[in-house]
Picture 1: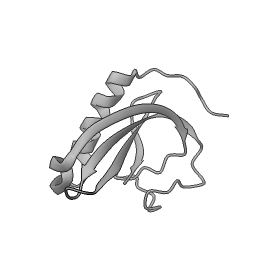
Picture 2: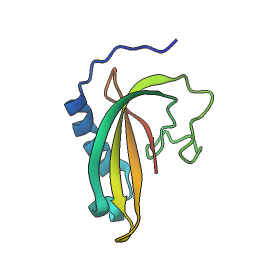
Picture 3: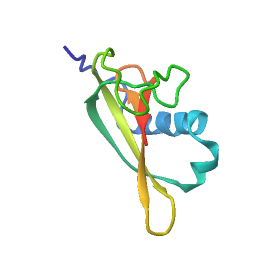
Length: 102
């Protein structure tokens, strides 16, 4: 059963995602990131980029229960032709960072 309490609104989730991005993401790549969108989804947290990183390299740890998260997606320009996404996941209930993907 997934808790569906949304206590963090979309704008606050984006503000938190920006904060977590600056706090945890690779500092040398921050200048190439541009915010794209923020969507509400049910995901299994992987705690990527955080001190609680489970080492699943962006994949969800199957022992973590699914949760409702705001998924902030940023576009990363590697060069003029290639853009790859970076995601920061924010718990929709309490605003904590629960993972991401790149």
